[in-house]
Image 1 (cartoon, helix red, strand yellow):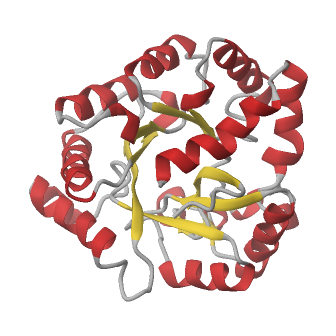
Image 2 (image 1 turned 180 degrees about the vertical axis):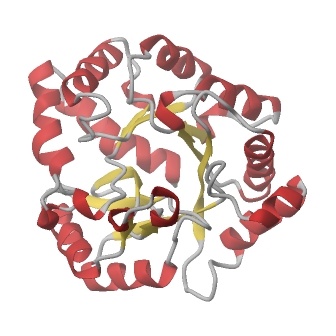
Length: 291
């Protein structure tokens, strides 16, 4: 569970392999020594918890995570579920909602593979860009079943900040309470109206691609967060970086995990966000949601 004494990154990857789909070795994040260095540096700046949302068939490796935790002392929460079209195993298309849910429940209650770790988050479950396929929706309905059985929260993936409203509508239809749902990747385009609609539904939203300026500039992320916090929504927002590539690591020339604290948080302060706003998004909200 969450260590409330420190900050939490709500949506990260410490071992992920999307290289078969992406066609580049850069998308195989598995450099143990460099990741340990990153986790030690994070703790120096106050981050104690990582929500690791790599699930089955994304290159999840629970033994790798066990070793990072043992080597560095970072607290990592693992996830269960299935990602999006293009990353599903063939067998998933033949499974019922209940069978899919049973697999999630098993990883929450029994454990992941033969490791000592159990999933405590249902995620990242997602929808494709501008499309929510039938199988993706079946995964969401299965996630709802697993949520009701275990009480664990649901964390989603929006491809390029699309389909979040449809995700919420489906989960509401399944009866899931919105304060147990967090919508991922809300910060990849100009979509403030959609974010406000989602916040008003009662869910959490994630600004979790901080540092990915090629998609959307951090200056605009900071402006939008200022706008939302000024309107009283700080208690429904969480932050992260969604690091997925070797080239994202500092030793490989990337921004590194500490960028959020060392560069983006000062940008938020310059926008006028208070220390309470920052603490709420990085500590209070994740502690409440993921516990």
